[in-house]
Length: 369
Image (tube, rainbow, N blue to C red; front, side):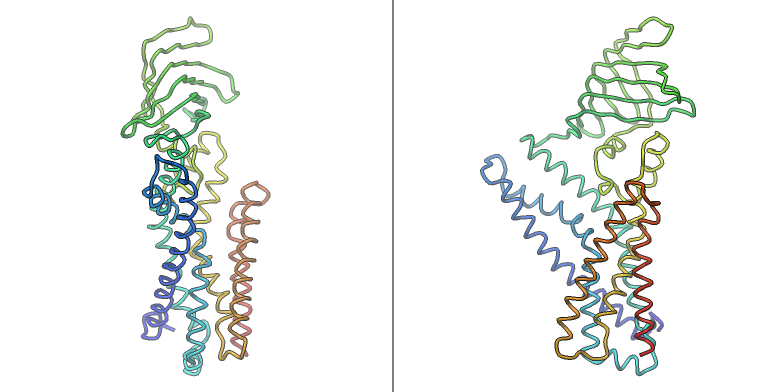
């Protein structure tokens, strides 16, 4: 079926409108439970009011919705397929000579488009909201409405200076000042060769990082074969910036799809493992196809010529059960990928490929019936 045909546009509108309806419904349920959790948190606190509940709920919402998006798409597709089956539209379309794949083509294309829009435009917003949510939680726990401390354990980060030298930066405490300035205390800079031999050791009492320049005060420089140098201050050029340090403390979920490739390259160049970040990037890249796979699963249970008595209940139970099995299986394989037991690409794509193949096999059988 041509997706631009009248029937193709009709089916595309059905899946899009139903998806948005289910999405709004699920968002309302999620916000209700998150609001209850936020109210429990502020009980007994005089320094926090309903504004915390609102902000907590809204900033948590995008990330939660992203996790349940495949289920939302599955429910939406089941509703659409059940509706066209119940109204005999599916029988009429098949009687007109349209194959089951021709029927599904405009639906799958619309779902893929929704998935690509989510990755390209919604995900950056979701990542930013997740970062804001983590900041709000930290401010709430520290009773400091302006707190921007990334870690109470300080900072450890590594950077490759060139092919032969590596820089390790360690600071006991750090916090964000106004704008893009990061303040640090008790700083140690270690320049080492590839054999982990220290070439130069720089100590600083305090320092500020801004525009890829680290301004150190109260500096001592130790270098093999040379006298110790004491300087009131010095400027150290580095490729590490505020965003990189933020990413060092947040989950890959808080980094947008567009920033993940550069983050992966930065960590790999610096000698860190980027396994979790690569898994996250590939998962986002594959997410539109996961949504399409969930539509195929929905078609297996909800796309029928007629429903006998009890057929609707079977459709609901079987569809939801299969969806949960697919989800938990994919999470198990995902964990194997993060821990390096299987290749990253295999951990991401194998569940989707299995669902596609199984769905296609059963739909081909249904086509021949």
